[in-house]
Amino acid sequence: MATGTENMEKRDRKHYLSDISPKWCPGCGDHAVFSALTSVFAELDMPREKLTVISGIGCSSRFPYYLSSYGFHTIHGRAPAVALGAKLANPDLNVWVITGDGDALSIGGNHFMHLMRRNANIKVILFNNEIYGLTKGQASPTSKTGLPTKTTPLGSIDRPIRPLSVALAAGATFAARVVDNNPTLMKEVLTAAAKHEGVAVVEVLVNCIIFNNNAHEKYQDRKQRDNNTIVLKDGAPLIFGENKDRGIVLDGLTPKAVTIGQDGITEEKILTHRLNVEDTTLAHMLSEADAMNLPLPIGILYQTHKPTYEERLKGEREAAIQRSGEGDLDKLLNQGDTWRVD
Ligand SMILES: Cc1ncc(C[n+]2csc(CCOP(=O)(O)OP(=O)(O)O)c2C)c(N)n1
Image: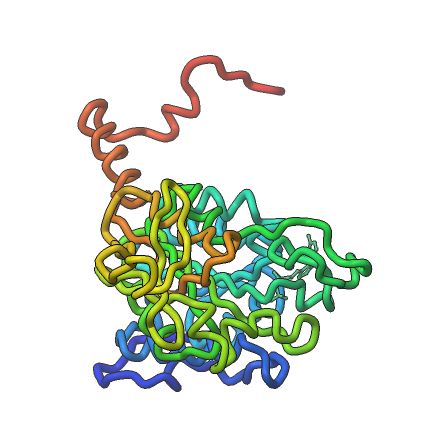
């Protein structure tokens, strides 16, 4: 993952590729994310020496090998800790975390949650194939109820976690979802995530062709997706459907799908999507929409602006120096109750 002083020419996507070609299965959704993210790096003209891509363990976590940037294939579920360390050591770095649904939400659930609440300027791409791919097909926290897997041969009896609900509950300031076969929207959302000043999580619904094929079919298939997804746009009504005549309204506190033109429903009655608001009510509703048999929201569900972890830490340090002067580490370690063991 060598890097060096960059020349001043505009970079193209190949500039970000290492000499190792991706080893994901043919047809795996991870290829699409790799292609979109490297294009976004090129479009943003991101210097490689400022780019650090940190992953946990899983098929998706092989990502840093394929990039010509700094990177670290860490241990299972622990990419957030390494990423935060890198960001604090050098706040100028563009730090990206690559993780899977198992890596982020099983073994790494605790770390994921704290990465979200701290709001460091770190970007997380969560590859959700609803299965453990690398270890050959065990149920993950996002596997659908009833899914037969190696560890749930009679079907999973668990309820799936919705990654963006966890992220929002923990305080994420940017939460988005995209599907692996919509590269245009994926690039748009990854670009917005890259520009967001704070933690950004992008859940990508990726197909695992071997161990959980077509898990996201109703959101990917051209014939079905318009009726099963709502593409979110800031300031636009929550309208969906192949004829663009379906929408979401609130019935009391319950969101429900309606048809425009029926039962007195007009477009004005449809809920409007809003970003850059502090209130998370709408975002929480959107993150749970499919659990309420509503279409799956795609795009940016939530974005708000709050001071980053690195800014807060710097502020705290500066205030302490102003109050008590520059510290002396030797003095600190040797003051108060200390012992000498001979
Ligand atoms: C401490 C530890 N426990 C378990 C494993 C085995 N393991 C490796 S990857 C993985 C799950 C990967 O699933 P996911 O994060 O969904 O990624 P995918 O392979 O599907 O991209 C597991 C359980 C491990 N490597 N380390």
